[in-house]
Amino acid sequence: MHIGRQAWMAQTLGDLSLKDRMQLLSHSLFPVLKQSIKMYALAGRTQSNARLGLSLDDLLLPDSNDVKHAIEKMQSCSSIALQNHCLRTWHYAVAFAKMHDLKHDHELLAVSCLLHDLGMTEQHYQHHETCRCFAGQGAYAAKDWSIEQGWQIPRADQLFDAISMHMNPYVAVDDGVEAHLLQQAASCDVIGSRGFEFSPQFRKQLFQQYPRLDFNQHMLEFTQHEAFTRPQSRTAMVVQSGFKHLVNLNPYLEKAGQ
Image 1: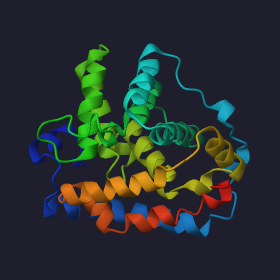
Image 2: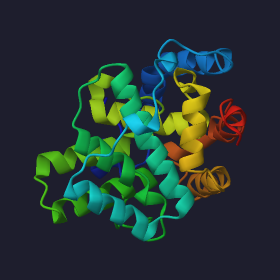
Image 3: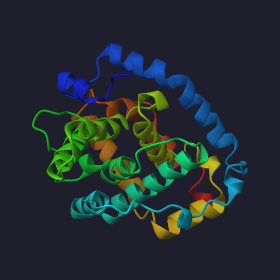
């Protein structure tokens, strides 16, 4: 699946062709439909994985300079609500990895989650001169940052792809474990996908430590603006597919006291 990767972004500037739209739909229709059915059908139940008693205390960010610097980068340009979303996304991502035994680069996953929405910030919305996609803008910004940290190009390219691809409706494990975990986790936080895998206690603990604040409103306003100004982007496609309703109907927020 090449859509969202760096080569695709450089070639298309982030605009979806009709062929790209059809490819995204064919790649994501079944897994997204399956997840959506489970999301609503199992919202009131506790799955076996959730009964493992997973706690935030079990999930610790890697203790590395790059992760510390990524946190500083995130904090330097993101609102508290956006920072909290990025931190919740990391918790969901690493929890998914633990529950499903997905081997991954812990540092790369952490940095990808922490910096995945740089393109939503004023500082980086126009980071790249010609890119017409906020996820691509964020990916370029994160890659440039990683190279400044001394990352080698292949790893910086992995970071780019994970961040840019998170706006695809679905990213399979075969498309990259870190990219898969980031996309699934961001979707879990925004619309509730796979929320049934977590206990109400875990979600309550997560929301208490990293409150949503005005994140939903900000996300909806931003995506509407992005769809209007960049009408051929993946965000526009998602907005046209009913994104606002999915955000507002997230079945796991009320149960977490949100």
